[in-house]
Image 1 (tube, one colour):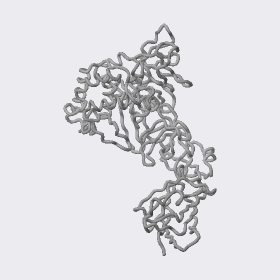
Image 2 (cartoon, helix red, strand yellow):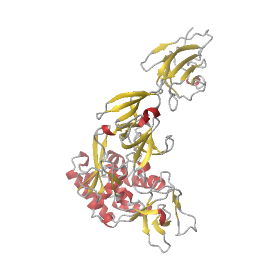
Image 3 (cartoon, rainbow, N blue to C red):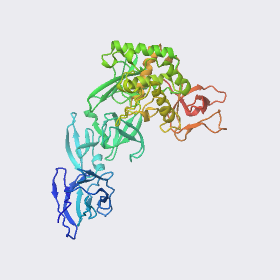
Amino acid sequence: MKFLKPLIATSLAALVVMISFSLNAGAATVWPHVDNVEPTKTWKISFNKPVDRKTVTNKSIYITDSKGIKLSNVITFSNSDETVQILPPSGNYRAGETYTIHITPAVENRDGKALKEGVTKTFTIEKVTYDLANVQTDGTVSIVRKFTSFEEAASQMTQNQAVLKSGMIVHMPSGLVSTKSANGSSLTILHSDKLLKKEVTYVAADTELLYVNSTDAYVEVELAGVNYYITHDNSRLLPGQTVKKRSYYYTANGSLFHSIYSHNAGSTGVYEVGLAPRFMQDGVHYYSTDGSRFTNAAGQQVGTAHQYFQYLPMRSKTQYTAEELDAYILARLRQLEQNSSTAIYKDASVKSKLIGLGAELKRVEKEYHVNALHILALAQNESQYGMSAYAQKYNNIFGLYVTDDNPSKKEFTTVNHNIEELVNVFLNRNYLPPTGGYANGTNFGNKAVGVNVKYASDPYWGAKNAGHMYRIDRMMGGRELANQAKIGLTNINEISLKFRRDPSTSQQYAYSYPKSGMPMIILDDQLKEAPWIKVRSDYVPYDELFVHGSYVGRLEW
């Protein structure tokens, strides 16, 4: 009598061989060995009848290495439970190692009939080789020499060469990195450590990053002036000689613009950042990973200029009234109606969800200590001036709960309810308080400091919001830029900077910031208790606090 005929797929070429089991067989069936198996191999075991899932465990079907150590493979089911899949272990199989698949008689079908004899099958993972190759300007490669270790291949690399693993570039002298989707997610996680264990932030697919270094285990990149580490699965390495287009900054009509190039899509998008730095010249391309420190095409530093609205803390107050904000909103919507070629802005001055929000924005500013101008700029950026589908259908002018991989269609009863959710569930709970789970500063910022670190996958989300604030202020007469708040940045690295209730260390501190670069509004830096300075509190119960001035640097524009 024969039953439960397992079929083990032995290669990606769909080579499937049937094994029959006899109730009277004694010893386990040994299936032929397979060499050169990919380290990411998923084994598929097919049966002629559905298996009983309860009998498929890590004791009845499992894989061991050459030392007999059992691996922690994940097992899944498909084809109405007639197929059992053994996924590769975390980190994949080791190169050159030999493993054994064990299918024991404990596996039963749904009728309760078990295998009389077990099955074992050995397989050896292919040995990894690293190719040293010449890289042409058109991206084509020609292999010069093969190595058995990454370190040896990398040590022999010269200019215009690269190290390849399985046909993919894993190391190069210099260039760019374009992120890509992997493992079912469009996000690329940026880590602070080479072991890729400490997650700091994330970016969307097709984000351009500056290449710093790499091994066969990680890629080191720079973003927002900080070095991070990402996986090769999320990386497309672009050697410098192959890069024909890239992102850059330029100036025109007194403003700074950022041209963003998407290397995978081959498309370009531009947004207005803010005031043009004094050291820049129109018609010249400049490069920066943080929007503040700029280099020329040769990589030489040419100057530093921070954008005021990108660093202005949300705990500030706008100088504009509710009536002025309402007047601006209508005027801007009418401009979009008349001048934009985008159909979405048709009848914007009548349909936009931003109309009449001035009083509500100022109320929130007063009660919850979040600048009305920041909220309006965020709404403009996220909702296409209140005309997006999410804004129109769901009263969601901030894209709340609309994540990259799981965009929710959460509906709000009113736009005011949506504003309350943003301020009280997101900002004042997690982002703005120094003790919040996502606290990195109260400014829009970038991927190193500010709300942008944990809020959006777009690394330039903070700069784009700040650009909206810049244009709002410009259209309303420029009072914000003409009467700028004093902004300082923490400059301490070794210890947490403590903010206190009086200019001394006599009382318990209110809160601390453990990292440098945190922005704050300086209210008074001429105290008699110098070098102490008075600053606006990022923690709502306090309005003003004090901090030792030697740990704060004045931000210059």
